[in-house]
Image (cartoon, rainbow, N blue to C red; front, side, top):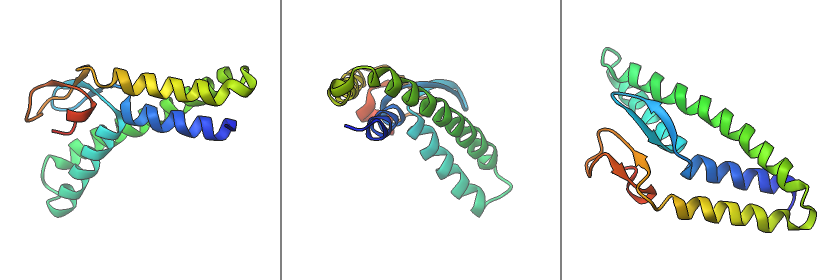
Length: 128
């Protein structure tokens, strides 16, 4: 696996499964894609009703989501460099790291306020 492919794979896995702290109506821990999804949803509502609080929520979620995305991209670059020292085992190491991250994401480690199923959940329930 090339360094570019490893970096992209790790970055996608980090965006999907790595919990990051955020501040919304209440603080929580969720993947970056969760923040970007709700930020986009609030931005759509803000376009239809510009006087609502949704503009503030959209700015909060999208700003934090983009900031965390940049940080996770830097982390993926660093991880790719560290894995690159392994030479031909870089691909299997990157795949093992992604598999471990997704396996851990099945534990209830996400805390998302305003969830319909409770504030704690795993990756499968983070958008409830």
